[in-house]
Every structure is written in structure tokens, then in C-alpha cells.
Length: 389
Length: 129
Image 1: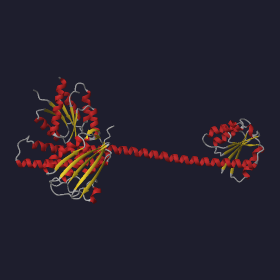
Image 2 (image 1 turned 90 degrees about the horizontal axis):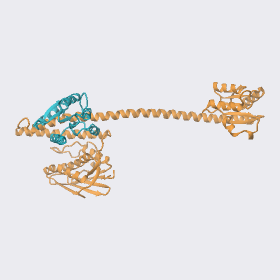
Image 3 (image 1 turned 45 degrees about the vertical axis):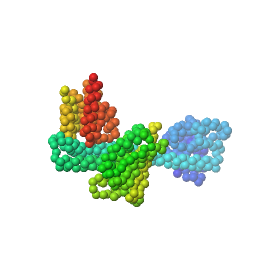
Image 4 (image 1 turned 135 degrees about the vertical axis):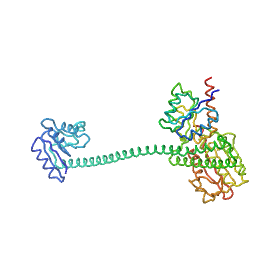
């Protein structure tokens, strides 16, 4: 039920308009006041949906009353119809824009009155509904922002916890390993006194196992960092030929011991690539030690580096036991170990390739494998040079 | 020739013992502190020629100890090796910022540690000549 306020000081007019409105099809609640001041009071106190004003009133006139009321209602849409004797053309457009929304010329035509009232009330309904919908949407958006802010705070706290956890776990695992490693080395170096052959042998066994445990701990810590998204690269311009050569030199003794030929084929004597030295050494060491591990005596492992202008390609090729086709796509997953043999030197964590893959991918490189079961495998890495950085 | 004095700071008593054995074997005099506050006190009192400093210390952490010593004109010439099991990228960055002269991770290679110590002590001697 819309509330209409009639503002007119002549009783006859008041009655006529009221009569026209109430006998129309619309459901209206009609209030009457006789001055502009009372109209303003009424609007301040009550909910009014539409005002019908006579332009000539005692005190402030209809148009000024309109302007005042619009100042009060502000954003809220309150349609007003000004009833005036003056013909349309003489009504200044600015005056119209500043207060009245529409007008009717006197004598009032009932059809016109009803149509304009109904029309303006319909517009008000639509505007009010839209405003309500927008406010609801805004409320929803505000709540969403609040929720997001909260989630963000929680994520930040979780991130700090992850950092602290990794830090603490690293420290807690590495400390006893350090102590064990140091004291076995001190014994092995015969600082407290000479050792018998048996004692030397047993201490060497302990040392070997401490190293094995250390490698496992470091792999687990790396995987934890990768999972937590906390593995960070420290890149610099590095000669990759020199880097790979140093890994080959480090692993040559192991290859010799296993009676495997270790060869290299490098496209240049030096090639600069933007990379994290320690991590790429880790990756190449992983591939090369795998190749040596899975190649039988009298086999061959070759490391090749090719220059592809914007990127380099590094392959590790072995004549080893190869990988069965059904295992190829599982190769880079965590904790995968195929053909685990009993005996020294063949055990691993199953994490090496997963870590290697992640390191290469973090460099925006690629890693792939070709293999023939029982004939050999070829692991291929590409790395963008990115030297312009 | 007087032995060079090294202040070794770590709260892990066994690690201290192991490193002390190595340093003593290499003919250095070793003094020990087990927390950050003690480290500062002993540094001020004894003016060591080099400090080996763990990061995770009670009372005051290693980075703060390093920073305070390097900020003090009387003590900032003493080379400091930061020595830790944490090895996070962030730690290395902070170590540089607080003025550490070297950074080593645990488990460590005792040969590497000894050569690092020697290198820093020689550099000290050269700079003061």
C-alpha cells in the first residue's frame, strides 16, 4: 500500500485529489497537509512514497518545498508531482530538475493524475528493489572480503608455522647426525689412539651408515620443502660444462669401482647458464649415480651436453638394466624403486628422481626418459640459458 | 708464538666437544660458551682471534650475537663463522646482513672447517699488518 501525501491549502482541491486517488484501481493510503512546512515535517517523520504538491502554498511554495524535501531524502527516491496553473513551456527546466520530478497542469485531469501517480510509484518500486538488491549484494561482497581476509591471516600464520617446522626439524635431525659423524671421524683419524684393523673396519661401517642416513634425511627435508612450496632457488650465471665435469669427477671413483666406463661428450668447453649451482649439482649427481647404480660391470655411462642456442640439453645415457615400459610413467613419483636388489649400494630413498624433477621444473626446464628394458636408459634434461637476466 | 684463541659457541655439548677436539689437535686454544649471552660476555672479556657461532642458542640467538659484535668497533674485526644445522636460505641471507664472515652447515666436514678457520685467521693477520 503506497503512502501518498497531498500538500494543498485549499480544502476543495484536497478532497478532489483524494477522491480521484481512492476511486482509482491503485491501493493508496492518502494523507493531507496544508503547508510546505508541514509536508517537510511529515516526510521527516513518516514513510512517504509520493508527494502531490500545489505550487502555490502559504509559506514556502510547492517548488521550494520539493527542493527541501529532496535535500532531506537525499539518495532515497521520493517522487513528487507539482500541480501548477503555469503552462509547460514556461516551466524552467532547471527548476524542474531541482525538485519536482513531474508536474500536472490545473485543472487536474483525473486520467492524467492517476497515470502519473501510478507510473512514478512503479518507477519508485523498481528503484527501491534495485537498491535493495545492490545493498544485499554489497553486504554479501563485504562478508566475502572479511572471510577472505580472515583466511589470508590464517594462511600467513600457517606459512610461518611451516617455515618454523622445517627449520626445527632440519635442526633436530642434523644435530645428532653431526655428532655421530664427528666422533666417528675423530676415532677413524686415530686422535684418541691407534685402532686395530677390526676396529677400523667397524668404524667404517658405522661411517657409511651415518652417510646413508644423512642422505635420507636431506632427501626427506627436500621433499618436505617441495611439498610445502618452500624450496627456493639461488640462481647465478654458471658454466654448466664445468659443473657437470665436476660431478663426473666426483663419481668417477664409484664408476671405476663398479668397473663401468664413464665418458663425456660436451658441445663446448664452456657454456653459461643461469641456474642454482648446488641444486643442479644435486640433480646431475642423482641421474649419474642412478646410471652407475643400475649398470652392470663392463657397462658404459655417457654424459652429453648439447647447445641449443637458447637452451642446453644434458643427457645421461647408460647401458644398464633399463626400465620396463609400464614403470616409465611412475618413474618420477616419490618413493618409487624398481628392481630393488639385495646387497650393498643398491638401496635408495626412492625420492631422488622426484626431487630432481622438481629442481629442473623450477628452472623452467624439462626432464624426460627413454628406456629399453635390459638394454639401457637415457635421461634427458633441458635448461633454458636465461643469461640476459 | 702464542696460540690463536677460538671462541666456540654452541648449546649442543657433544658437538662442542667434537669440534674442540679437532681445534685443539690443530693447535688452537679453545674457549667455550653455551648460550648467546655467555658468548658476548666471553668475547668482551677474552678478545678471541676467531668465533665459531651456532645460530640456535638459548638466551640470545646467534644472529643477534653476531650483529652486536660487528656493530661494536672494538670487536668487529674478529672473524665470525656461523655454523648451523638450519641451512635455510633465509638464514644465509640474515647471516650476511649481520656481517658474518663465513657460513657453514652441519653436518660439516672437519677439514673444511679447519681450512676456513685458517683462511680467516691469515686474512686477519694480513689486514692488521
